[in-house]
Amino acid sequence: MSQSQPTTSPPAKPPAGPVARYWRAGWLVAVLSAVCIALLAEQFYCYYPSRMGPEQPIAFSHRLHFTDKTVNCLFCHSGALDTKHAGIPPLETCMTCHRQIITDHPQIENLRRHYEAGQPVAWERVNDLPDYVFFDHSAHLAAGKDCSQCHGDVAGMDRVYYYERFQMGFCVQCHRDNNASHDCLTCHR
Ligand code: HEC
Ligand code: HEC
Ligand code: HEC
Ligand code: HEC
Ligand code: HEC
Image (cartoon, rainbow, N blue to C red; front, side):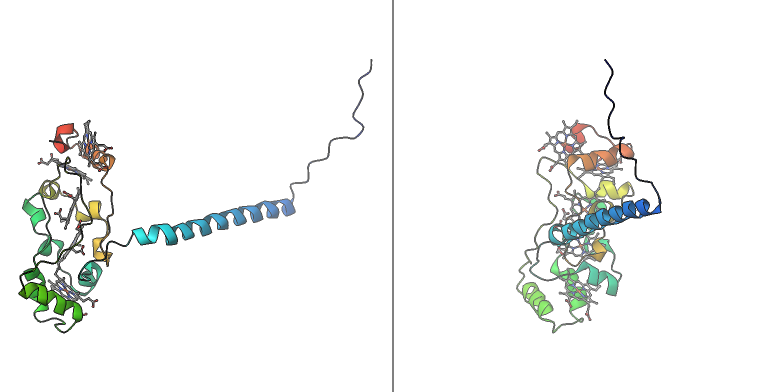
């Protein structure tokens, strides 16, 4: 029995000439642009709003205070130097400047009303660890860590947002990298 031969030869591969290369490049550009557009849209609709922290009762802007004035973080968050908590400054700290600066600005009038009534401003918390986790600012400052490693570029923020969700892996990874303790009881006591 003779085997039947195919009547037509298989189609020849198209020549991989310059035209084909242009076609392939065209596809690549189209796919890449689609990916870029998708990423930009994601950035705009999902990422951006969550990158704006909660609205605060008084519109205190870190960015504004850091572009206009180079006030050190520790001027207001001095607790970080020697205690567990960095702390939120009392209104007295704001008044050291705002007794003189833009006193007729509505936000500053509001600030002064709170101050004179001895009524603290109810700032919204941004970062909050669960109670079963122990954290201490001063230990990290003593070890030479910078605020930005955990809080990002606060000096560039109008409304402070959380930079890190402070999941266990984030803490433990840095402890590993720095040969700091990753014994469970360091953070869970
Ligand atoms: C003039 C005083 C002042 C200075 C200086 C200042 N802060 Fe603040 N900070 C505040 C006030 C008031 C709040 C609470 C309102 C808010 O969240 O904006 C706050 C909130 C924060 C929070 C969020 C706290 C939370 O609820 O978790 C972080 C983080 C923070 N500051 C970091 C910094 C860092 C880092 C610097 C230096 C780059 C800095 N701050 C400088 C006054 C200040
Ligand atoms: C070291 C001085 C200084 C301290 C301390 C300070 N501010 Fe200011 N603040 C300024 C300056 C300077 C401006 C900009 C003034 C201008 O626009 O002419 C400003 C502007 C503002 C404004 C107006 C923002 C706007 O939208 O125009 C608000 C609100 C404000 N500060 C709140 C606070 C609060 C709340 C605190 C305390 C947590 C504080 N400031 C501490 C110097 C200070
Ligand atoms: C190693 C990470 C780390 C570094 C470095 C760090 N923080 Fe924090 N910060 C945290 C965590 C975690 C919390 C939440 C603490 C909690 O809920 O008990 C926090 C909370 C805060 C708060 C809210 C109030 C408070 O004390 O809980 C402020 C304000 C703050 N940090 C400012 C600063 C400033 C300013 C610096 C630099 C001088 C700094 N932090 C450095 C991790 C860090
Ligand atoms: C940027 C790196 C870094 C990050 C992020 C970090 N740590 Fe640390 N941590 C250190 C270093 C370094 C030490 C100091 C080790 C030493 O002094 O031996 C330390 C020490 C500690 C200590 C011991 C303090 C004491 O009293 O001796 C605790 C508790 C702690 N970290 C908890 C945390 C928790 C909880 C987080 C996450 C919310 C965290 N750390 C995130 C670097 C980091
Ligand atoms: C450097 C600090 C650090 C160390 C060391 C650490 N943890 Fe944690 N752990 C955290 C933080 C921060 C959280 C909170 C995570 C969150 O809020 O999602 C956490 C959460 C947890 C939770 C709750 C998990 C959940 O999903 O709700 C358990 C369980 C836990 N840790 C067990 C351990 C054990 C077991 C060890 C030792 C092998 C350990 N941790 C060591 C920081 C630490």
